[in-house]
Length: 268
Image 1: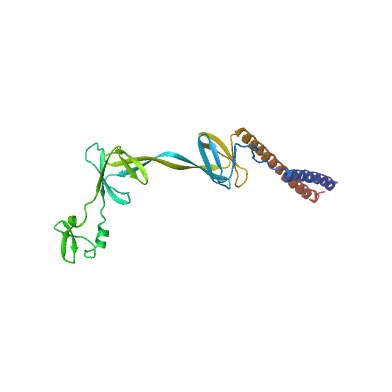
Image 2: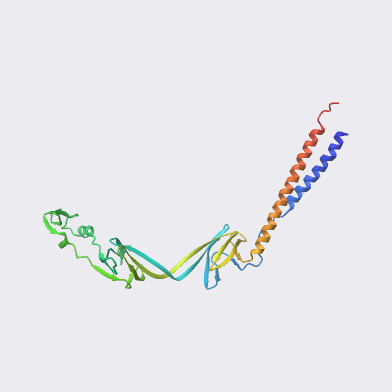
């Protein structure tokens, strides 16, 4: 009688566990999806947000990058006083004029003495110093003062507000201080905006939710209510699914224990 009752309960718990597991196996996990997003894009596509045009540089594996160009972006370059800079394809030394409030500076050509000596077959490869003066040795014995041998360096002087060609741009001497010179100019600049699936992204002041419909399709939408509702559905589904797993596990374990208890030897 004991084993018969146990068999009935075991069958009941197995049916309950199997039913719970079948619900888990057949249930479809809800996913976030947008039927009519404001933008649906792949790599190479363009989108217009206000007066700014963005290009999808990349879109894959749940992340991507958008780029846009500012046609008149501001650039600056700083030249420190008494430093060497590359200008007009040559090396120059920056020399700020004296005084507490300078307004001009001079570029002094850096003479490549080594190259000049190497090109002269009659000159030694290095200068020599005698009595505090530098000399170039010509034909192994003749000494020529370095100041006389090497050419006079070129100089170019600029003041605040002057125009100067720098790296292909017409720049302006924006400011001159005792320690540095600042150049300023405008030119196009390409900026990048990173996009991650499941996160917000701001484009030209507008905030969008980014979602990847598949590995290469980026969707941008401002329907945040739709996203929140879907994530709530997913959370509820996972809660129910975890509960059903609990029912299945407890039911099968109970059935196993009841079988074991039913076959315990009787004390009477």
